[in-house]
Length: 298
Image 1 (cartoon, one colour):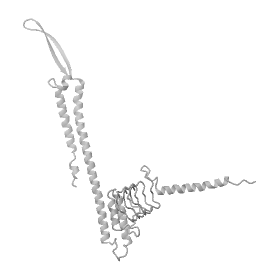
Image 2 (tube, one colour; image 1 turned 90 degrees about the vertical axis):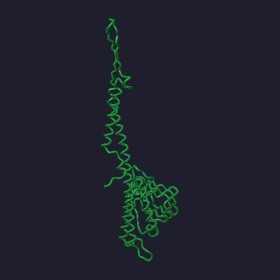
Image 3 (cartoon, rainbow, N blue to C red; image 1 turned 60 degrees about the vertical axis):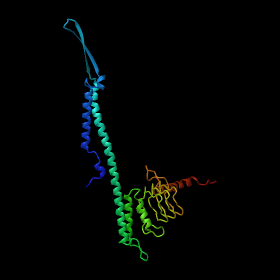
């Protein structure tokens, strides 16, 4: 399998190790040269020792001769070990960060390629159902067979579940343009379809059948939803700013906020369950109230 372009630009592990060792050796040699008496820099701050000896010259006079030696400090000896190691560590860290970014780019490219592949496969399958299986009836033809409709619905729902927010837009737009999801007589019913997190901004869905559809956290800014059927649609956390909802059927649609920590908190199922539980509790407490509310007998 051929590697992607991003993979070829990664720094191999053997090259990272070689560069780190090379930097460590160069720094060790350089730092050691600085510590020699002829070196400069750190050699000047080394410990200096001066010894004076008394000798007698040829004339019989006593002469004092001073000999000065420089000895590296313990800090210099420690630097001889630490600085090369630090240099090698820096090379390793920089290489690791570079490879990490390249790996993230590669994963992003692979994810985008996988999304495009899913979308293209879905478009090919729908094209086959329309052209060869008669999913889209021509004028004068009868409605498509039920098994063809169910197959198209299943493929649509499966494709939407595998697509991200940006790619979910095209299948929905395709269904709308082919008039598969007309409000009056929809050919396909895509209830419970996963359009959560979809980018549907500025999308025209005029008089579309979107009942029982999952639109949580979707971007519907400026979308044309005039006259659409959004009965029982899950719109928790969706962005409906500047969207046209004139004449839209929002009966029992969930427009509550979306709690990411507890996604089921504001779902209609749990709300109805809690409502029924509270009503049953009220009914159980009602006889007790009647028992204590007996009229006084005089």
